[in-house]
Image 1: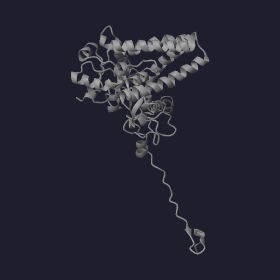
Image 2 (image 1 turned 180 degrees about the vertical axis):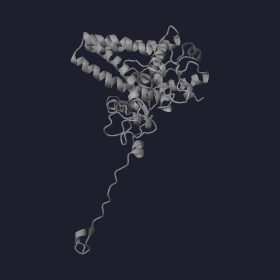
Image 3 (image 1 turned 135 degrees about the vertical axis):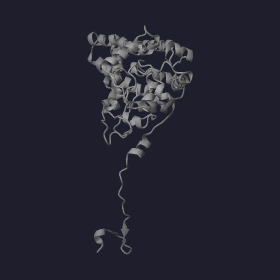
Length: 362
């Protein structure tokens, strides 16, 4: 079986039913799988899924502190911008366009490190990047880790239920995962460590990186605005971490065909362009599925792409050495130019030198 079909840990309810169609588990089955995958006491190989959701829980008290003790309208506005725009744009830049698709390259590791840590670190790169390759290869078909046809919970809890790497890969499969991850700068396990921990990422380096990242940003936020601002922004990050888990369900029409002629140009899967994710995070999802390796997804004039603006700026200052931009190809393939009427050359009378118009001809 091809690597793309085996790289992820198959859930207990399987990818396909007896007829080869998408297996659609009940909510009870989904929750049972979810809590089983978080149980580190049962199996320490569950550490990455547990950590992913533990970070969300750790951020919840900050949100409550802001809402019930340090609330202010200014803090709310700052939290909204940070959650929706800053965290959203960073997710597009780092996890989506760089870690998964390699749409651009950093000049050196320093700028990669800066970009990686521009915001609070909440999502492990391994969970996002490897499974997202599968999503593109099997989009809206059985095996797609967040197939919208499976329902809301199928997508919302996918990072634990469907996205973790298969724990029984042979060394060849493991090395292919290393290849998919090596450009991200994540410290990877050896094959022996992978067999012990069930992950590509090394747990100790991952946890240390998160602690350092959170400590740095809490200090910065506190110095900028005190404990109220720090709580507002940490709480906002947690809010984003929950909300982002709904994106692929909505970005693929909630399991229905919501593609629109002239708005969505990719009809090979159910991805759609949405105004809000596009404006706040540069996620023009249907465009992205057309050209997944493009550093720009906002091709049309109204399609704001904040992630692209960051990448372009970094290229201007020399931090990004190379990027792919598929805008010209998009217009060539999908936008027909408006025909321009030919204008006849003026005709002049050889005797008088005056221009001759059609009305002058008898």
